[in-house]
Image (cartoon, rainbow, N blue to C red):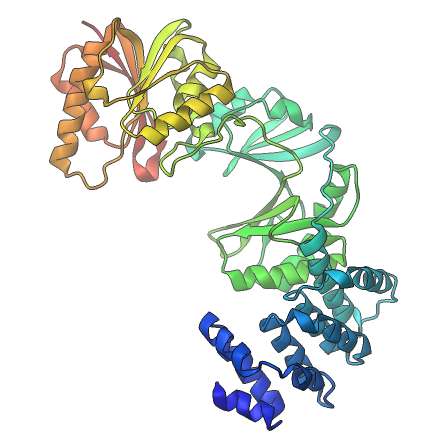
Length: 487
């Protein structure tokens, strides 16, 4: 690095050394060292932005941005205004996005207006769009975005409710409109009353289908062109009170380079009507890989608040998603009774109990867990849900109670470091303990991926009878079991 900076100080091979230095300072320690070696050389770097060679000017501006030399913000902006080569102008703005340039916002906003009213030709389109995108990034950085107000009723929409693949029909039967059909990813719904749909708790997320672009190719330019021809933008206009621009992010398992190329292509095609803003957005464009090496595309509107599970303020890495909890209790509903006395032996943050109580009212609810933080979190979640649950920080196997329960409902602990023998013993102890706490005719509602241990215990014990066995996640062998206890 010393040699590179030494050459710059001597003004030798400037363009090449500017580029090399940019590569060197990607490491934080190297960045700090470069700043020390270039201390007091601000004028030199500014002079490089006035070089005859366009690529030298470009690299000089980008280097100032990489070095976060905010004291040169005004100089970078002056060079930007003076620049005649369109392919270089965006580089000055990219540099400014890494600097403190708040004082320049009025000038940048004025420049954005000029660009928006400029006559676009085949020759200048790319560079105008690049400038606008870079200015928008800076404006979003300081001003945030103008969030949109959704129109929730009276506008027809086709929705894709993503849900458990094995139980799409369960969700479909709960939807209070007639125009529905199954989809490989969930349930398609046509409606003009979104609040009505948001009363259904068993779907995970709600997306809008995009027609004429349901499958996108891996080529980013072709994909963006298809989106521009689709009804995506029309949906955004119809579903919001305010117009463009709409700020979006791309959500996908595709590599970051592809997502970046696609975002740039979308920004170009929509010319300021849609702006990529990964950290502050109202729209999520979701890409789902298909077997044919392309993407199914749909769109989620973050402007539409999903308050179904607003109580869930606290979550653990092992916590069950509330839509799955709602699905489990829906499947077990025929065996649940009102005014039951219920207990969850391994309650976590209380999600399963809260969804159980939401579906069928209970008389008394108890919850135990050995993890103290989970108990604290569960109490807070239950308070937000306005559900009365008695949380107790105790091991279920040491728990005592004055009366017995009608129902034990639980998400069983998953095997981690335990051996097979240890896990089998755990299930044996659980069924022993459950018999102490259940009334005759009481039930166990159990979510578990240890189907062998569960069925073995039922075979060995005449007091237990399996009422229902339902696969929830086939790839991971998670099942819902409903088991009756008879004394």
